[in-house]
Image 1: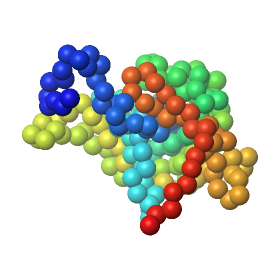
Image 2 (image 1 turned 120 degrees about the vertical axis):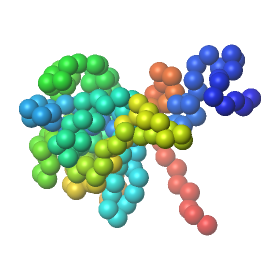
Image 3 (image 1 turned 45 degrees about the vertical axis):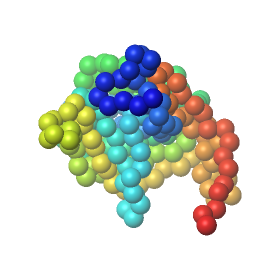
Length: 197
């Protein structure tokens, strides 16, 4: 099977997110113009470089996280994990600007060192970021799309000590979540190594 702009009848549900998977969940913390904390999970999220470390997230539509990261020039990433899945899901709800999702989800605001945006204190790891760019993306014809992309540089890292084993951050101990297609998620419970040739 193959197709272009029109999905065939044999695929009633778009498989794109299932093919581009697993995706880490970027739990993005920001503050709005009034300084009220905002928190939302993004599965269009990833690391994009080292030296310096950089991460990105994107939303369909200029959602609160995008607007806040663009206007305030900072944001945080907190790792979404299986023990925190109910809180992560609660923060995906659409609420008005000015609602504190940390409070709504029963989460503790971690105090950042170098940026104003808070992070999830219960998370095993978090990154403080300075916004490098916040852009509305265009398609191949140059037409504006509904996708809005934020790129940030990591300026401070937080890791809870109990998730460090033998000098490495242990994702199986953290039980990191990943987003798949449709309404599917996965938990990292095992890893394996492969040396480069």
